[in-house]
Image (cartoon, rainbow, N blue to C red; front, side):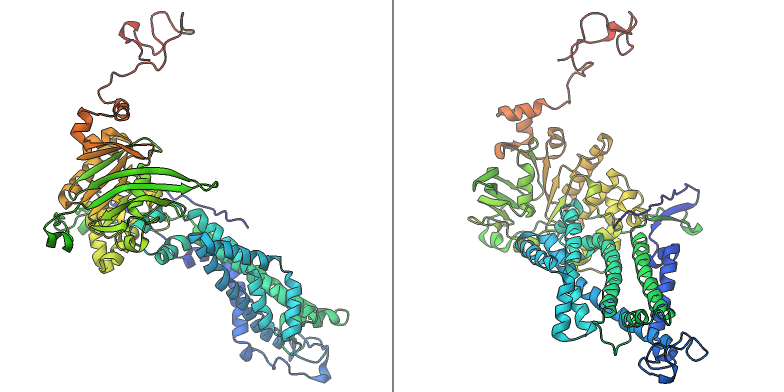
Length: 640
């Protein structure tokens, strides 16, 4: 099925006295603006109301028979005529709607109850559960559905409820595969990692960030499954395998076919009811899909005259003050102070198909103290990000700690001899005492939620404060990180802010729960040069004011020189040099460090050409000008 969604871009005119406020219309409001949605709701709503009020609207009981009026034509008493047993067609059509719709809902409900949770778990966690689930799903899909239903009918009798439960189990693999595929496509997205680092539990991440991706396909699938269930149920009853004492559309269809030459309209009414219901379900599924995934709208509101001169982001809260460093009880009692983070002989590897382990981090040791910024520098593939992710506990599932240990505030998160990060210990630290600033800010904000929601939710969960208090803190944080209009940014969606603002939002989120350690992974890589300096100044100002430790992962020595106190240099997974920034920049001891420093552009003579000019005259150029249209005497010797 196609998941294409028509999107409409609504431009926000810049008018004096107006402010663009981002809102999302309710799903029902957008649904009612869609002609297909209105048509489907009218059809299904009418059928549902007729089914609900069948005991009131039906002039006779479903099995009341008048032998004197068999196959009677429509009249004032029997408005749609009667069948071969003298039963009123209109009454049976109404009572049949009850049983048919309920059985379809039962089938879809069973399929969702089995397939959706299994797909979410398998897609998010993978591993053994996914392998076992795939095996079970393959078995279910290999079973011939019609034969299974016929066997169940023979074993349990003509029960529509048992048949629909069995059919729901048989089609649950479709929900499983659909959900698992959708979850796998987003489980490694950066905004999911950011939610995990912010301290949200797996259940919260699945409910808030993952389920929003699968809901539209699930709704469409449910509409289709309900229609198929009606068709299957009616088909079995049409073949004479249903309960003849129950009024369903399938039984009526079978009755009409037997008497098609005597009373053709007996076949028309149940067929028309089925066609309208199945068609309405398909239209409703697509209309709801469009309503859920429709583009956001910009709603313009006039500012009140009284607030015209007041900045939207002005707050009266006091500036954040530096927090005293948290020392462990053991350190205080013993009279000694330990490091905030201590990495000792760390090794990280990945098992290979031949049984070997490929090391990406080997024998790395360093420490970070409170109020200190440590830079980890290296080229791509040097192992710096893997080292940082080891501290965060965000290594891939197949990664192994092959050596060493990691301590945070004196407590092991990776104890000597452990081959994995202890997630139970780290889950109590991530988002609370350890936070993360990722690169590519636009990819780390969930596009389905406002910026304010993504700032407020972790604070409510981690700090245990109310939403109102969290909102005030979020507005203050947005103001602290240099956003001129916190109110507007709070209500905006990620696609409506610039990359620099998005990075400031991530920094605000990183310090929102008052961490002791912030790990920043290339925080300026995706930003323009003009914005990078502002972000670096902001990080330094916040670090000094809040007395937090910072680990800055970067490949740029220029960033290290501007921001860091100490630096470690990594190459091919190993630590090659460590020292203060002043010592490393002035007197690098290792050749690799000298090479990295040599790659910096600061202080270098600008290159006018990348390659030596060709010999002889340059085609299509005048004799008195260079290829750039400048005087030849003004050109410098090209730098090779």
